[in-house]
Every structure is written in structure tokens, then in C-alpha cells.
Image 1: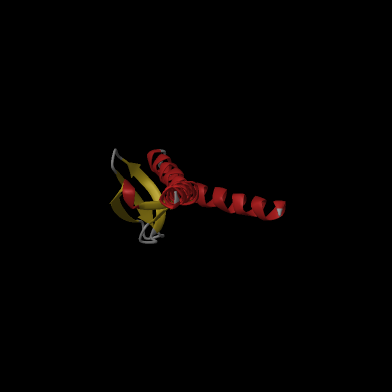
Image 2: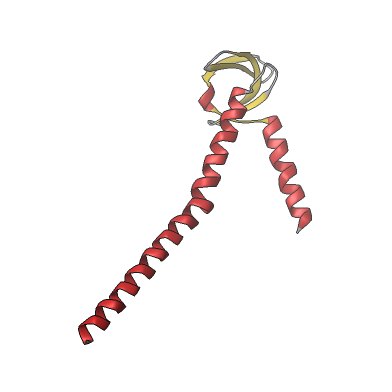
Length: 113
């Protein structure tokens, strides 16, 4: 009889451990994985919506205005000397529109608190 009780207690501990592991994965998904995937989709949409005249910032912190857009590259001018640089679309970090929208969202979030 004593053996039966210890096996039952071990089974209960095993199921509670399994529930805790599942809960940990759920927390990781909703707090880390899901927001990262949403951000990736947003950046991809931004890169696909680039047009001539947009102000951009590259991942190397170079800023400029787009003068030509192709399927996978972007040509932009930097500064008043009108130097043209051609980069791949994946090298674009943000646009002026995107930065303005993020700043407005942060300002609105601060007002609500």
C-alpha cells in the first residue's frame, strides 16, 4: 500500500511539472516570440512600401532621400553634395514616417498613464 501512495504522489508531481513547462512556453511566446514576429512583419511591410522621396536611415546609421527603388535595391542621396549610394532593401532600418509614428505612439502612451 505504501508503494501505491508514493507512485501516486510521483504522478501528481510529474503532471504539475508538465503544466509549469507548458505555462513557461506560453509566457515566452506571448512576451518574446510574438512581438518579435510582429515587428519583423512591420519592417518588411515598410521596406516593400518604399517610394522615391522617402527619408530613410540605414542599419549603418546613414540617412538620405530615396531617388530610385528596384525590386531588391534602393538608391538614395546623402547630404547636399548629392552622393548616391545603392544598398539592398534589407539594409534599411527605418523611414522618417515610421520614426514619426513611433514617436507619436510613445507620446500617446505616456499621456494615458
